[in-house]
Image 1 (cartoon, rainbow, N blue to C red):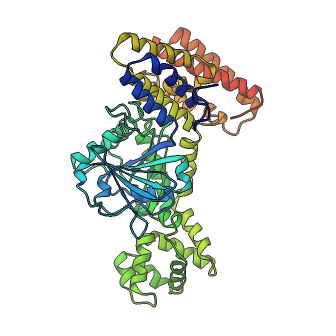
Image 2 (image 1 turned 45 degrees about the vertical axis):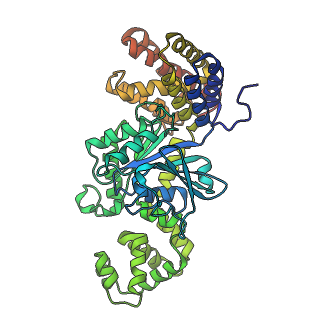
Image 3 (image 1 turned 180 degrees about the vertical axis):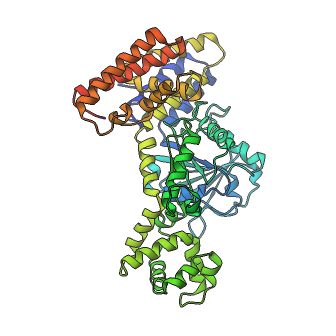
Amino acid sequence: MTALQGQQLAGPLSAAVANLCVALQPQVSPATAAGFAEVLRRLQAPLQVAVAGRIKSGKSTLVNALIGRRVAPTDVGECTRLVTRFQYGNVDRVEVVFTDGRRLVLPFDADGMIPASLGVDVAQVSHVEAYLTNAVLRDFTVIDTPGLGSLDAASVARTEELLDPVSRNAVAGAEAVLYVVTQGVRADDHQAIAAFTAATASREAGPVNAFAVLNKVDAVAPETVEGADGDVWRAAVILARKQAQLLKPRVADVLPVISLLAESAETGSFSAPDAESLRQLAQLDAETREMMLMSGDLFTSWECDVPSGTRARLLEKLDLHGIGEALKAVDAEPAITAGALRRKLLDSSGFAEVRGRLDAVFRARADGIKAAAALASVTSLSSADPGERRRVHDAIEVLLAKPEAHQLRLLEALTLVVSGAVAMPEDLAEEVLRVGSTPDIPGRLGLAGRPVQELTAYALERAGWWRSFASFGATPAQGRVAHVVHRAYFLMWQQLRAGGQR
């Protein structure tokens, strides 16, 4: 029977690290033991995902879509300058957490959102905690962070303090990051991603715990993108691929999305009266519609039977691109229901793929991500006492020597290569990245869609190659990574021979 039997943990790796903490607590200083208690608390909590990006990048709109409820303020104000944690609770409520530890409980406003004004001195606020009954928060705690770029230093400092898991107060840190970019990736985007993913106990950003979205792609001018053939979404996909190359290997991928459409479709903001108004607009002649969709001013001021105020609300919910997509759907199916039109808008937003990738990158790997972050915290928390450090180090080595803990070794090796701590030739670095960050065996082998016999033979061949490289061609640091990759291929070979591909 383990010390944590019955506790809610992400999986066997998290359980192994949790039991390591429990076993070590009597052997370390009180300060270190308190840090281990915080690690245990984090291991029992849902995966914590920070949503980060520049100011006005659409982060909070995307957060609302992820939660499935319009609750995060999207206009610049008090709350957008604070870190806000959205987590599961039995009763909807807002708690303002002050820097001295005090808490103030507030209700949501009449629209179900966090109040625009908290009625307190924001300079004394550490962060805001919003508890919601939304089921998605059982698996993820979503951390909405202040936009980077033009914020005051105090706002940035509050973000860094909350996201630092080895801070003096052992504040729970983000274990994964979803980074939001718009059309241009700049050099400091790399620094920002590194800063937020450093929350995983100073581990570097990587494809295991980070991916990005290219937001507001409806603003892309398709004629400026080679190969887009005038199509907005094709242009967005091309740009997202380019951004992925720029941000590599900090993130697993960059996916195009229109967060405003996703928010309206996922939160119930788009209503039956909205659908009826669009059906009325669809009856206008093609030339009039084309003119109206040239700008927001023309759309709201043009004389037609749909009231200007109604059109202004449609513009707020869908923007011109979304309205255009909705009108196309009505043209194709004049009797389309409001629910079916909402689903069309959701499809047009690209959000389904973002949600799917969230599941593939984060949910499916929650056990490994949480265990790796916790293990790094355990290492960082050990005191300056040499004896204590040795006890912690030896206990971790015993854990990592177990076959079932190999995934942690692989994540560690991937982090070392991605961060540049262990230099590898580019082709080998790519292979380490693929083996360590792709969830399914065919993908890890780079042979998606191939027959099992070919996968099995290739896994054995690469296992032998990496073993030889570790013994004869590698530096000592490369050799340690190579042994881990060799073991990964060998385990895949064993699994394929036993008849499994996952």
